Amino acid sequence: MKIAILLTSNDTSEFALRFPDDGEKFISILSPLRPDWDFHVIPVMDNIFPESYDQYDGYVITGSPASVNDPEIWIDNLLRFIRELDEHKKPTVGCCFGHQAIAKALGGKVGKNLSGWQLGRAETDFNSLESWNQTEITSLGLYSAHCEQVFELPVEAMSLGSNPNCNFASFKIGDHFFTTQYHPEMSFDFMYQLLDYMLDNNEIDQELWKKGKNQIKSQNESEKFAGLMVNFLEYSFSKRQET
Image 1 (tube, one colour):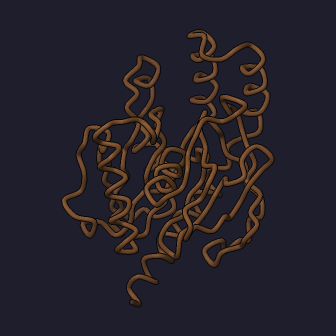
Image 2 (image 1 turned 45 degrees about the vertical axis):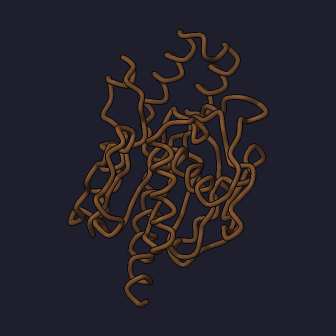
């Protein structure tokens, strides 16, 4: 399969430049599972988009420090492109910002968390075992780094998972969109240093820093979620071929 990773992170800080970009992070967790897939990173945060929705077999929309509610041209264009992907039933996975962008593009509501930053690790308790969840994963822990979340799903969306701090931790639309509020691409080292960076820059307080450091002692279950991603993309692609 030919997969486009739509890179949405516009973070050019010294901290961000210490690490591979989010496109490379996703390739690092997906390519071991599907080494024959052809991955392309598209910097949509620079307002660069695929020439056509049909240029790729499937899409991954990454996380970003930007808000889907920001009045940026590239965000408006991304929401428009998501609606095009939806219209043509293109296999798409959205993570964090990508999850929120899909919801907003199709009529859902995204806003600030009432309790502020969610930093550390969060479990998603799945309430629906889809056919691509072949190992029947009922709960999965991923790193969290967000201050906004989805408060209302699009009409056609179905909630797949939640936790006490997030009613819509994962959802699907038809057989072509699958999302998570969390970050399968983030490593322990990245999260550890991110918490330090945010504390040093007065973005979080000592209490939240300590809570996050304790939570990330339980590792990110990236490999499990990457398995869900590749199974979903293959399943969605085969369903589309049937129509």
